[in-house]
Structures are given as structure tokens and as C-alpha cells.
Length: 331
Image (cartoon, rainbow, N blue to C red; front, side, top):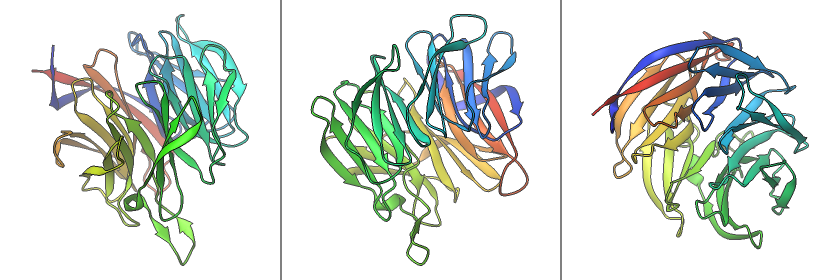
């Protein structure tokens, strides 16, 4: 059954006491995990609608990713990773490691589920065995904050994004040699101001297409915006398309639907949106405005429904969060 990417409806909403930054479904589609600017992991049981807060982190939950049939990973701003077993009625800790000395800004799982990669504020990128959390590899130290990670579908390459001032970079690495094979400068997403010597922009998220041929980098076009996502050829590094929003904030997240279209989540002060894009065009085919900045999107394993996290608050610094579940219409 195919869905209509242009039409969706809200099914349920769940409020949270802190702004939310990330979310993911478990592989079985039983739970939705979410995290943000507190130390609790929010879990929604999709069948009962029950909300549970899992304990274990002691700082902001910055990234979430599912791995294998019954495991979801969460990472925090103190460098900790927790693997949650989703086999029971309520997820429980499977293993926990202190992975980095600083905030883990990026987390990615290999397509075969054997490895996970983490990147932190100090430019460290580490690769771990997913089964037990043991360190397998470590890339050469990068100079700048790692803001994105993505495994290539072939399992032999990993892609990193960093926030080098004026020229944020995408790099492709060969896992067997731990050597860099391609570097792509992305000045379009820089928000560097020389008078302050601060990079206000940079790449905020990174994904690779299911066939491995394309890379999407999310951020903001220059210092003032608008929010945008850039599509690059993964073999040449050539910029192929720009998906530009009408919103002046940041594009914080993107992901591919199994039917081939792209979704993005963006936000500015007190407002946000999520959009649907055709990969072959530079125009969005659907846009939904929200009451606060959208930070992430998760597509259910059945491909028929999705969840969006956002921050809520009247001021420039939001004080709460919202998870909104949507259902696509059938074609």
C-alpha cells in the first residue's frame, strides 16, 4: 500500500516538561523514544498511549538511534551512551558506556546493525560494537565539533560533518584503513561572523540516501538564513540540489522515506515547520507549520505514520516540548 506524501493528519500529541531534540522508533514499531533538554528518555507505548520516563542519563539527551530488532540507543551531553532493550513492556538498560569526555553531538548505526559511530564536541569519532558497546575503531582526531555522522550502506565507509568556521566540512572515511577518501567544503551553511570570530551556523545534521549515492547536509544558508538542506553526490562531492525553506531559522533534521521522498524539520524563534520534498526537484511538495521549532522526525517502520518533536515556549528560549504523531493518507 502506497501513501500520499502530500496529505497527513495528526493522530495524537504528548507534552513534555522540557524542549525535545531527537526521536526514533524501535525496529518493531512498539515504542517511540524521544529526548531533549533534561535527563529523561521519553518513551511512548504506541498501543496503549502510555508515557514512561526512563532514567540513566544525567544530562541532556542529544541523539537517539535504533539498532537491531529490539534495541534503541540514546546519547547525552556528558558523553554517555545507553542501549535500551525493547523486548519487554517497558524498555530496560542493556548496557551503558562512558563513550566520550564531552557531549555526543552525533550518533549513527551501520545498516547491518553491527556497529555504531559517535562524534563529540572535541572532534573525536569512535566506532563501537553494537552488541556490547566495546570500542572497535577510532578516527584521527578532527579539529572541530562533529555535528553529523552517517554510515554508507556498503558498511565500508562512514561520513562525518564538522563545524569548521567559514567552511563546514563533510568527509568520507574508509573504515578498513581509517583514512579520509573525500572532503567536501560546505561554505553555503556557514554563519561565521568575523567581528565576533564565532561560527553561528554550520552543518546541523547529516544523512546518506539508502542507495549511498547522495548526502544531505542540514543547516542555514548563511548568517541570516533561510533554513536549507543541501544534496551532494557522494562519489564526487558535487552540490546537486538546494532544498530551501521559507523559514529563516535552521534545518535541524532530514530523512528519506522508503518511497523515495525527503522530509526535513526546521525551526526559528517561536515557530517551525516540517516539509516534504521531491528528490528530483528543488521545490517542496508539502509544508506544515508548527507552533514551535521542529527538531527531529521519525518514520514508523510500517512507513504509514511518523512523529515530529518540537520545542514550545513564548520566549526565544523554549521551556517545554511536544511529540506529535501523524498518519499519511493512502493513495
